[in-house]
Image (cartoon, rainbow, N blue to C red; front, side, top):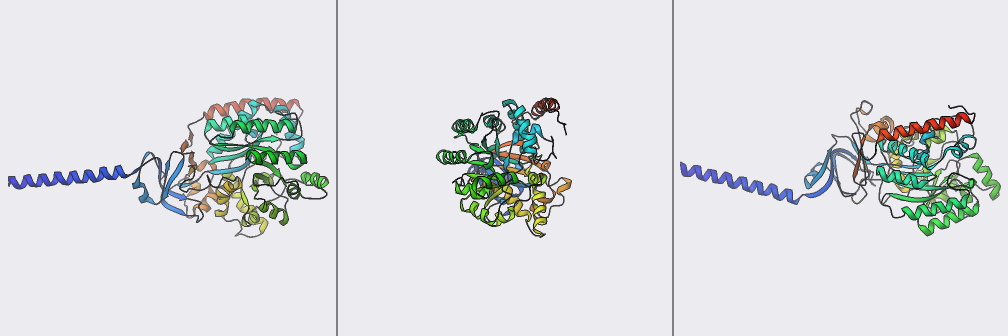
Length: 474
């Protein structure tokens, strides 16, 4: 009996050793990654629009190394694991057009006719400074990140100050230094604006998350010669150009008079200013010929529904442009125009207004809206090889959206839930370049309270300035 017990004990020991060796071997074979997101409803936004239930995303460094189903998790050992309990995991949202620093002017003179020329330009002349740009951009960054925006395209003054804030919070951005024919805070004329932009571009050209750019304000606020000069420089320096295009009646009138009756898009084509480097914001007043020109020249388009309808300028034929294969993505415009910098707040309006305009309930279905906020926006910025979908080799810009919040329960269709039900506050986590910048709505890279306090202090200066000018603080 003692002999049998000894053999039995030896057998158990050997079995235990074999089991431990197999486990160690499996653990050793598992690839080490920095972040593993599991138990997710993954919206890949790849070509097939694959949706993975109980999905997994693995991140190493700043790139996605794997996307798949639950059993994929066994292949990786991660420093950080996010078990999201069925929440939506999707590409970070991309805001294709804004003026982030204008957060400090939000809610002023919202319903003033011809607001840009009568109110905004004079306000900017009095108050735009490096401090204002920094404070406003910091506030805008926090708002966007907490709403799931991981990349944005910005046009404003002192754009090097905006770049510092983007660098600090850890987001991704295309930042365009404004060029305009009027004297402004950082340039006495368009040529000084161009030189400021060139210096900025040289400073940030090789930054891993910031793409510097030219931003001529609009065709009608710059001369033909300036627009052509910027086009040539952008091609030589290989940087984007952002511009307000086909946005207003005033623009139509000025350009028609300048060009012998041509539309802004036709005019830009004729002077050689339509190139693949160009991103046109708004693009409301266009016909089929204009749309064909934009497609021919591979121009990106930023669709800003909230700002356009709030200003009563009209509804861009964005659905037609999307269906015709143009590079088009969603934007918010500045926080004096659409008032929020939340792309999620655009979803509902984009879906519903296009149904109304086209008198078709089936028009602009949710999947198209989400594509325009992710891959469509990436294409508009000519960044589709880097961001916009959750695919192996792409940069790890990822957000997690809460599906347990009352407004998201139940969730039968994730696209419909996002477009018709979600709030910006439903975004739980935000990851940019592989780094978790926000977890459970807590941003780790900047002091949100301090940023808000600085913005409130600056608002006192705005009130004093507006009252001194005899205007009403509305």
